[in-house]
Amino acid sequence: MTPGSGLGTAARTGAAGPAPTPIRYVASLEPVFSGPCEGFPILPGVSLLDYAWASADANLPVPGLCLRTVDRARFTGAAFPGDELSVELAWEQQGPDEWTCAVTVATPRGPASSARLRYGTEAPR
Image (cartoon, rainbow, N blue to C red; front, side):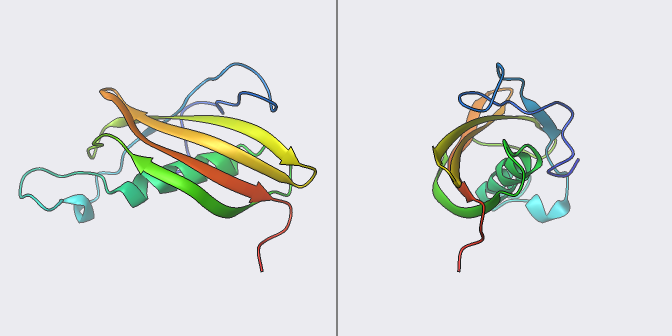
């Protein structure tokens, strides 16, 4: 599956809504992810960030928001091609036109990455 085509619904918490329900993906099996070690493919961190971003964009707390910046991204565990990824979102309103989204991406083995995405109603200049 590709980002944005999750098997579940948004995991919205905090100011935006109900208890978390993870968004689920099966990580890409593309051969581009063969990794630095022969026979040991790993999903690049930028791919995990893409799953996080696509999940947030598909589950905005209010219409009209767009990503302004990635405040932080941490990669805490390995994700492998074919892993089931679980994405959880926690939205928090920062001002009238600004929201942050704390995103966690996990594999069956545990957390793989987390990020804080900043959204606004107007694209940055």
